[in-house]
Image (tube, rainbow, N blue to C red; front, side, top):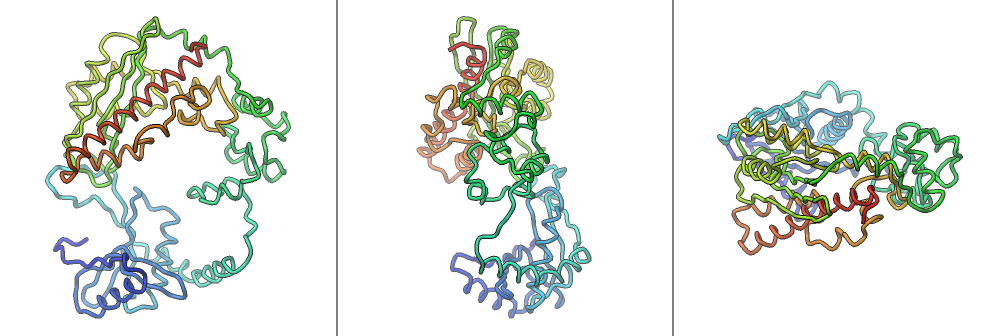
Length: 434
């Protein structure tokens, strides 16, 4: 948006009045340079315009989204911004939304033309702009009044998860939303007055998984099907337990990569022998270079031989496909490894539930119910995947000190190793072994 590099960024660190004053000053200065994060207010409604392009006395508003498509809420956002700017000297003649094109492939040459694609929304927002004053009045009324009587249901997750869920659902210890596969039927159950699983009639519970959850909640104890043992006994030894950590840059850094492409930079592998003995191998690349080949070669070496390779969710399968795309000479070995993958998640979901899981079979929800000693909170700064990505970015930054990089390395290795050890615990529990 600013090839010449002479655009102006409106800093918000000094607060709203300073940002608005800086915006007015910029607009009063003759220039064709774009303004980034220009700050405006109208009738108490504050907006910060991502890009305000200026040229020949005509301005154009460009709202930039990190998503890979235009969504309905984006159109509303642009309508609101346009309405606010319409009462200012920056009144835009056109409004566009730019989003990431996930088919863009970076060539490694520092050129990013095509990373963002634009869609002109000038006509689309015209009817919505007329509704903004009414929206503002409604918002003021809500703010001035008591807590609104908002019905709970699927709307609490659409289009994004509402941050007030914990407040609105506070009186429901075991929500009917915890039933697996409930989908839009949730609204029907709530409309009929069914909120808590403990009070839900059995005849309204339909699938085997839902019935297992319902029974566990009624009894207040875990339920484990003996069929899990039979299912897992079909897999021989040695057993491999694999977990990847990946990085997904919105703006690709390595040649041949796309926006948001998950590129593995680390793996952990626990190997269990027939007598239960565990061995552990791991790999982590913090060089900052493209890690795919080093990750793939080291993993193929560690998984030589035969035996099932357990994962938790299908994420590891996707990672192997990604590695194969970057290392075509290793494709056969990576595809053979993918053929050995066994997903523990559906096995756990078919056969186990504990009321403390609250409707989730994520390994971090399941693990405390079977192996509380494996506590993620006892780890260092990296305790979940998002933190692992942030730690990786910090570690490969040239400005990071060697001591800090070593600290990050320890945290990343501990976190990824915990993930595979957790899978070992889950598999042993489902099979009835300690």
